[in-house]
Image (cartoon, rainbow, N blue to C red; front, side, top):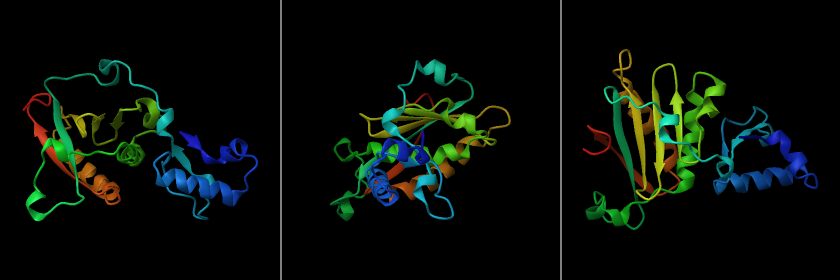
Length: 198
């Protein structure tokens, strides 16, 4: 993450208006993603950003998420392009129509990390292609599978968290509804009974 208060030091030759213009372009093209809203004054220089290109690669999966075969529940979110589709193609989820822009994933993550229990948790397990979201209500692993144009989610549904999968789906649906509007894609949730293998 980067605090934009540092940008005057990065771009000392630019005045505030020029910095704001550059940041707006970077936000538009997904080079940075806002981690929270701007200050009441509207000054973008007070905003904290997620910088996708600076995220580290994930270590071994076992170090990111402790697998629990008894209580882990799995789901996938598939995406298809919404451009140039006729009514007959609206439900065509074939491989040729799958499409998940990288910047959509990072913008979604920037929204999701706002839910964590502690600020330190937001960046504890945040990597280039996966993140662990640990809130007071649920804990889940979100992974970006580039080749499959899909997001795969593992939700802990053990004692006291039996309703977590439904809550995670509902929350992801709301967040994706915000993010997908500007990308021209459709998405659907797919539940799996055994580690993404049906």
